[in-house]
Amino acid sequence: MELQIDKLERQEKYKLLIGCVIPRPIAWITSLGADGLLNAAPFSYFNVASIEPMMVSIAIMRKPGGQPKDTARNIAATNEFVVNMVDIHNVDAVNQTSADYPPDVSEVEALDLSTAPSTLVRVPRLQASRIHFECRLHQIVELGTPTTSDLVIGEVVHVHVADELYERGRIDARGFAPVSRLAGSTYATLGDLFDRTRPVYEPKMK
Image 1 (tube, rainbow, N blue to C red):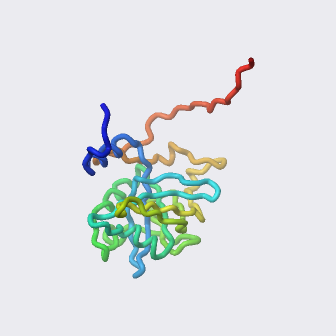
Image 2 (cartoon, rainbow, N blue to C red):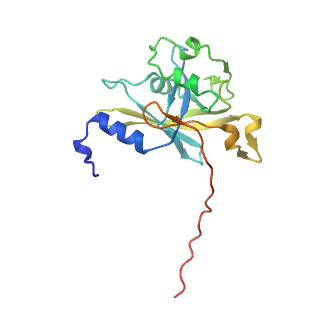
């Protein structure tokens, strides 16, 4: 099967990408509007972008008509956000915040989600998460002509990890029990773990 991109409709491209690029980690982002309204929304176009400086990236698709989503607009206005990591214990709450709430309604208030203050940014953290990345905006890259997605690159300035998940400088993956996105309405847990040692290149002797 070969698929010509210029022959595919938008929905076909969408289904192809989210069906092939799996599993995808989820960023449960809290952000503050210019009016102080606290927003929470999940995004699965999320990953590590850089180690030094420590950065993450989130692609936030725009609404029909090219309007930025609340999260992208808030980050552009305040230059701050928090990535609250998703696990098996909070995934139901995460899913609830994916509903299309009006801009003047806070998902956090509507769902009665508990928050905690951050250390270096003004945006609160969600207590339902056990790992948080406090971020400051590094750059927003507009993708598409006209723009259809805002690629947000944030510098991680502070991290919170629950004590039970941090051991000898590493995260306990099984204890973390992260949840990822697949296609459609399907999520996935960590599943089986296995190791593969990274090989060392050794040139053949002539």
